[in-house]
Length: 224
Image (cartoon, rainbow, N blue to C red; front, side, top):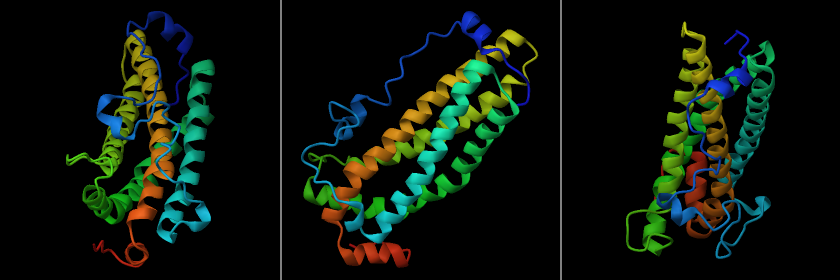
């Protein structure tokens, strides 16, 4: 990704119908989607960071770093739209995908293996959001992980493909699509982190015992 690309030209020739950026709202996400996506349900009692178990504090601390990475990625994408690819924006995009593929993937796996399995059982036991089905807020978070991983791979491949296509118009279309998909990924990740910190983690504090959190912190088990 070291060529200069004129995105203003791409906007003129792009035949794809753009979709408005509204996050990842859909019926399948309804158990976790309040009327305003970034407004926690009133039924979920918020827990201050200071009172969180250490296991959750560490996850939240990692979120802070990833939020900074998302912000830098967004700045790079917006700069590319205005100026085309430069050495700086090229490096910023590469840095984001490297971080995503290593640090954030590891973060997600620890959440899924240590917290989500146990928490899903707790949600089903207490009827929290499940309403008799096998779906819970954890199901939504796992779907977010899967969608984000898939979308990140697609975006990275689109960026790479854009510079290999011999036809310039086709290259610009693919590149512009990668930028649009990047905006969607940014919104997906931000909403995902919000759901964890403001809905699922507070519920975990209510449903998971101190001993269970200690076990998550110190070993690889997830006892009931």
